[in-house]
Image (cartoon, rainbow over all chains, first blue to last red; front, top):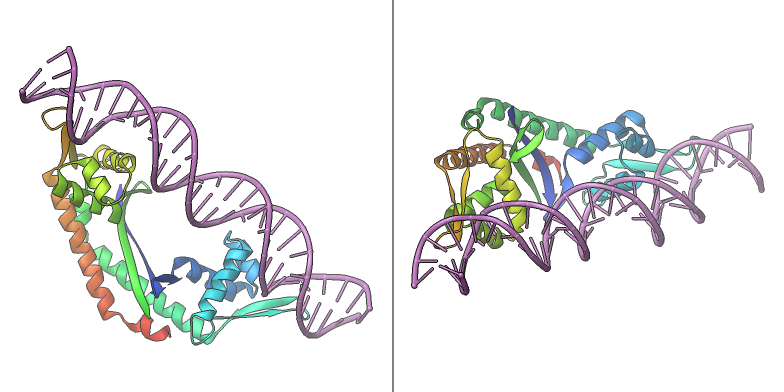
Length: 112
Length: 112
DNA sequence: TAACGTTATGTATTTGTGTATATATCGGTA
DNA sequence: TACCGATATATACACAAATACATAACGTTA
């Protein structure tokens, strides 16, 4: 059975900036409060997750994630209100596209 | 400057079936009348292009591309009416998503 | 039947991405 | 000041995907 799929993401000067991967990671950080736990939970290497957070923070006027090292629990990670706003906007956009695709079944009808 | 990008494709039983790559290849075959020329023109290896055409033909009730070998000009490739219909439907779908994204600038406003 | 240009097909090589590993750093607590 | 758990960072390695390459097969024409 054939199905239409889609993916949307944001590029900054032609480079990938925010998409499904970062979105999932940010959600996981929000839940876990730790970058290493978040990465582990979604089977992403810590390094990749860390690089990804750097990219988000460095290419934005406002940071997405605050990383803290040392301290009582060794450190931790938390997302900012800016990240929350962006996540919501991204999910809303995905939802809109998803609704559009449900209406556009013409392609599927053609493909047998 | 940040920009929203998207990609849509068709999967068949969870496997990639038709997307931007195949679409471009089919268009190129239509123009060139030859699989090797089409592949060369879009910097795709002949093998990859050939595999791709097999996938399209074998996983459809109707073929997309007719390949002929031997003969006066050594052979050639031509696309079927079915492929033409599918291409048109795919482009229409892309267009619809594109229009939707133009209206949905909220995400961009959030990302500074 | 030799030549030609294209399709057909397998194999070797390269390339790039992700992963594993190791080690340093930090700051609060006891 | 020793310890702890998390972040920070570089390097080496593994694997998969793409590509390059080589060669066979085909059918019409002359």
